[in-house]
Amino acid sequence: MRYKKIILVAGTRPNFVKAAPLLKAFKTLPSANRPRVLLVHTGQHYDYLLSKIFFEDLKLPMPGIFLGVRARTPAGQADEIMDRFPKVLAQERPDLVMVVGDVTGTLACALAAKLSGIPVAHVEAGLRSYDNTMPEELNRVLTDHISNLLFTSCPEAEGNLIKEGIARNKIYFAGNVMIDTLKNQKSKIKHQKILFKLGLKEAGRIRPYVLLTLHRPGNVDDPKVLTPILKAFGKIAKEVTVIFPAHPRTVKRLDTNAKFRLQIANCKLQKTGNGKQGTVNGNSGLRIVPPLGYLDFISLQSRALAVFTDSGGVQEETSFLGVPCFTVRENTERPVTVRLGTNQIIGTKPGAILKAWNKIKRQKAELKNGEMGRQKAEGSPSTPLRVKKRKTENGKRKTGIPRWDGKAAKRIVNTIINEQ
Image (cartoon, rainbow, N blue to C red; front, side):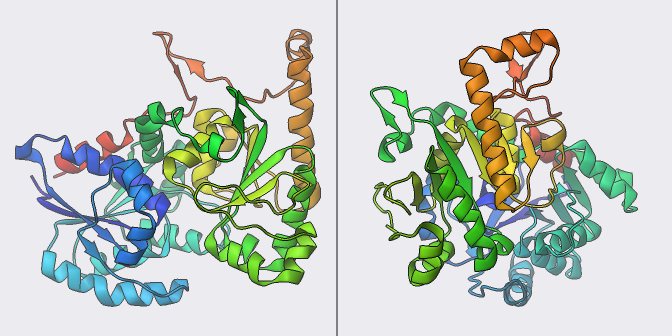
């Protein structure tokens, strides 16, 4: 066995969603073939405690090492990691460093390992938005070009790497580890109580709602961008409940800037806590709630009329769940979710957001009135609210995206164990 000791690096919630099935796959190996895997958290122990429910949902072990990064800017984070992670590498002497995703810690830890002469494996390699204004794009490209093993989640990613001159024998089309986690946890989703806590389910009936997630700095840090976006959702919320699990940074911005807050909803912002709902406008249904645990969030996604997001991971999850997704960005690094999934790129303009909502309303009305069947018979195009998943030969349903089958982590681990 070439890799007897492996460090797996993570530091954000999406990272841990991807790390969970990898840790599980390593754990299921026969003891004779099982390397020692050390989970390194790039953040602080305090960050872990704040996200404890997330770790409990995913049954993740407590990280073995915390790098204790405190900086808030990408440059500051990279500086701290590049100072601390080489010391961990010198002490632990791993045979392989595994990094996931595209955050600052992904690139910084990959670079530190490479400079220390340690091979690097990148999980979720090859994704490209071709938008160089995004820090994540820089992280993705540089991490891929210094990695020894590159595990891709879709055919497009493999093609991107080959076009960039990366050797084919380094690239492995493994599938999507985020979908592994979703499939592993899917049986628990329907038992979550989040709909009751938010007042969305009464007497066995679910009230229609739209889910909104925004976290990218380009959308939430500039009031000139965020205000029109939330104004649009304020209009939508007059017709249907909009649930917005907001990042603490965004909530703080809304809570401390009264003028900014009034521009959005012309009312007082109510914070939420202990499962209680909050609203931006008491006369409408725009509700700002704290960040949710993994199971609660997936439960909300799975039952939503539609999801509006700027998150790459949410684009993937909604495509697997068959829930309409509208990406509030000008591009995506996950075009497979548009080509084979439920995702549409709409940008950040209020008019485009409202147009997408009107499309959902129209389709909902067509379904109610039986128009979908008639249009299909007449041959006119119409996209259903839920995208049907194709059937396999044994009659089971699965997503139409190749290798989004819950076995990606197993493929990755088997490749690493058998790699010579």
